[in-house]
Length: 172
Image (tube, rainbow, N blue to C red; front, side, top):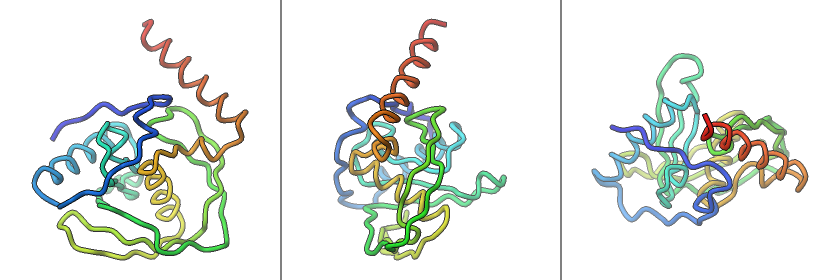
C-alpha cells in the first residue's frame, strides 16, 4: 500500500467525469488499499478515486475511523436509486478543498447500489452521515465538489482561501 497525493481545487482533473470500472480485479483492490491508506493519512472519512487522479467510479469510506475503529468500505460503480424529498443541511469539508467547512443541503435518505470490494452487487439504504458522505463522494465521480453547491460568492471565497494556503505552503 502507498499514500497517494490528493488533488486540491482548482485542479481541473477534479472536474472530470469518472468512468465505470470494468471489473473488480487485483489492480483495483490495490487502488482501494492505496486510497484507504491515503484517506487515513489525511484523517478523512471518504475519498473518491478522482481525488488521487484516477478517473474511475470508485470511492472508499470509513465512518468509524473518527471513533478510533476501522470499518473500511469500498463502493465500485455506485449509483443512487432513490433519494428522499426531505433534505438535511450538514456542514461538509473535503480533502480536496482543505480547511473549508460549509453547510450543504442534500436529500436526507438515499438508496444506493454498488459493487463491493469483492465485486458483489449490494444495495444500501442510507441516512445520516452515511447518506451525506455517499452523496458527497459520488458527486466527485461526476466532477462536482461540495463547494459547487454553494453560492457563487462563497465558492470563490473558498477557492481563494485554498489557493492562498497553497501559496503560503509552497513559499515555506
